[in-house]
Structures are given as structure tokens and as C-alpha cells.
Picture 1: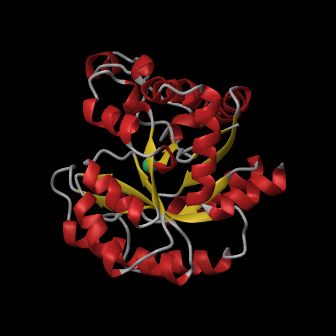
Picture 2: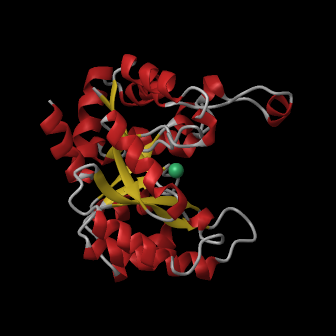
Amino acid sequence: MWIDTHCHLDAAEFDTDRSAVIERARAAGVTQIVLPAVACANFETVRSLAHAHGFAYALGIHPLCVEQAADDDLGRLRDALAAHRDDPRLVAIGEIGLDHFVPGLDRERQARFYAAQLRLASEFALPVIVHVRRSADSLLKYLRQTPVVGGIAHAFNGSEQQAEAFVERGFKLGFGGAMTFERALQIRRLAESLPLDAIVLETDAPDIPPQWLYRTARERAAGASSRNEPGELPRIARSLAELRGLSLDEIAAATRRNAHAALPRLAALDAAAA
Ligand SMILES: [Zn+2]
């Protein structure tokens, strides 16, 4: 019924209770989860998790992992894509992109890895899952140079114009826990006003906790957990339903359709499973 289009289920935060987390997600009606990779070191992990549980995965090098990555990791990514090109569970290249928020990062190296991964997406005709943080215009600039079949701008938090530019390039915009905060005015405005067919849902678990799981830095330092998990998706979706004045069923159907449009192999996978 629900698709979590972005969840780091392989993260260490889930090491002690991963199967319970998956069971809770299923019990909440989350039937499909997309697991993006972040570095060569977790390519096999996301692939085997996806196969073990009937989920989907993406392969790519995350902008925050670019600094630790070796130059020939791009070659290793290409090899992995070639090895698994016929794997129906490989639905995208990701998580790739640019992070202009975290200070002190090598922007040139990020850009080089991002551009190279867009070329791979074009070569393998796969959509991309992009990380956007204060970087929407730069991401779009490279997408104009190397058009891809589309994809998802994950955890989108840009302007309406930037949202429209992504949509024009065949992208859907990912919304999750951030939308549940009353004070997230810009994100809530976008979630309310963008065409419904531009929106997909995601948790980004274990990150981006919704408002009811959020803990302050002080609380976390005292040992409180703010871990997000894929089973929270339907409750997160309620914010979208309320903002748009639609029923949860309508939101589920629309966001599912949109995820399938953004990730055609996911549509084939879910059709085969139905
Ligand atoms: Zn992510």
C-alpha cells in the first residue's frame, strides 16, 4: 500500500533489530522500500538486503562519502552496475548529488563524482536518486549537461521554481519527516501546492525523524533515541493528506503511482509481486 522511496535499512542503527523494523513496516502497510547505497562498501549490503526481503535498491556514491572514496570507486560503481544491470531489484543510481550545506567539503570533488555518476545513469538508462542540500541550482546545471531518464530529488527543500525545474526534467520530489513540523513552512507550502503527481514519500530512516520522534541535541546526549524507521511512513503521510485535504487512501494511491513513474523498474517489480 505504501512505498518508502528512501530508507537506509543497512545503517548500523538497525543492526540490533532490523527484522523487527521490517516487520513493523509491513504491519503498517509499507510494502516496498528502496534502499540507496552511499559508498562501494555497502553496495553488496543493500543488494542482499533487497533480495532477502523483496525490496529494491540503488547503487551510487553519496556526496558526503566522496571525500573518503577512492578515485577508482567510480570504476567499481560502473563494474557493479554492469554486473547487476539485469537485476530487476536495481532500480536507480543513488544516492548521488551535491551537499552545499555541510561546511568544509571539497565541492569540486563532489561535482566530479556527481557528473560522472550522471553519465553512468545515462549510459545504463537508469533514473537517479539525488541528495539536495542548498545545491538545487548546481544539481540542475549538471542535469542539463547530462540529461537522465528522471528520478527523485530526495528530501527536497528548495524553491518552487527549483521544484518545477526538477519536475520538467522528469523528477519527483521526496517528502518525509520534515513535513510533519509546523515550523517547516517552506516544505509544507511545497507539499501543499506542488502538483500531486510530483510527490513521492520517503522516511530517509534512520535519519529525518518526524516531529513525534524528534529529540533535542541535549536529549540525545542524555541517551534518548530519535531513530526514524520505515513503519512511520503512513503516519508521516497524514501530514500530506491534511495539507492537501485528501484522504490517506488517495495519498497512498497517488504517491505509489508517482514512485512507479519515477522508478520504472520498481513498477515492474511491484506488478510482478502483485
Ligand atoms: Zn539518504
